[in-house]
Image 1 (cartoon, helix red, strand yellow):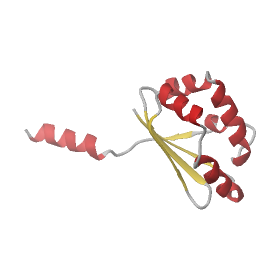
Image 2 (cartoon, one colour):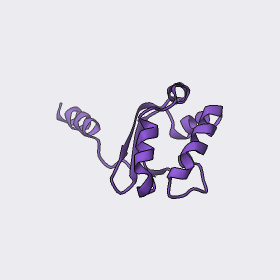
Image 3 (cartoon, one colour):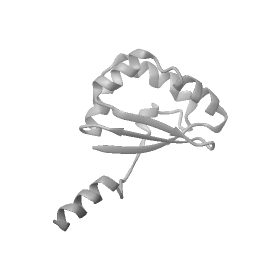
Length: 115
């Protein structure tokens, strides 16, 4: 499953967000990997637009596995002040985007009908 989501960092705190993500706690990195967050990347625009991408077995399941970890609770609390909606944990505010095109999927479909 490929998942893309968006969120929003407060524009005045973008440098702080970048600083924290340049050195994510090793235990947080391991927890993400162990929970099934594969090929996970974050992209940040100058206006605070944050876009995340990951591959996983099931997005609800990998989020639930992370929610069970103590390190995730600490990380979300640390990061919450940097987001526009400070009333919720950042990982609860992700807006999942619909995938409307994937090159590999369409190539495979086109090649299977061409034969």
